[in-house]
Image (cartoon, rainbow, N blue to C red; front, top):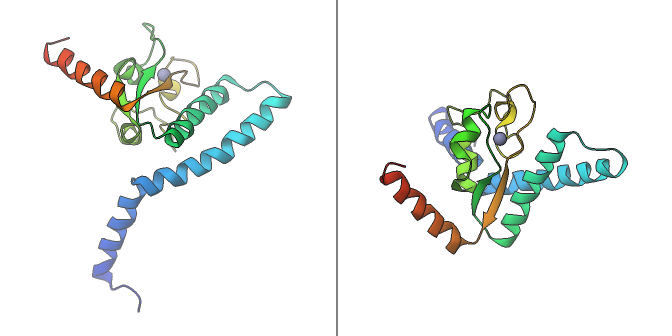
Length: 160
Ligand SMILES: [Zn+2]
């Protein structure tokens, strides 16, 4: 029996809920594994563009972190005066993998359609005039992540 119209809303809600869930991340990671091997194969014959190089680094970060059961990372890299607000706001801070997926709905996300926060990250907003973000996800152990996150909250609380 096909779902009734009034049930479709529920099914849609479940579908969109699943898109942001663990299953959706697993699907995305499976897709990354394919993209990673394609880029690695390409890198053997020609030099990757900077954009591809950093996409590859971030996809490897995430796939490897999930394999090791890590979830906390520091948004790594440096910022300059010209660095965009998206990367400036995140640089040096501690986040979880779930936070990255939320960035796809963040108001300061780069104007890219589609936007994949792991592959694109700060996108062209990172360095004005360039087409890539060179920031990386530096994963830490859960204990270290929780400690750094607490420290971060305390610093924010004291006005820094
Ligand atoms: Zn960046």
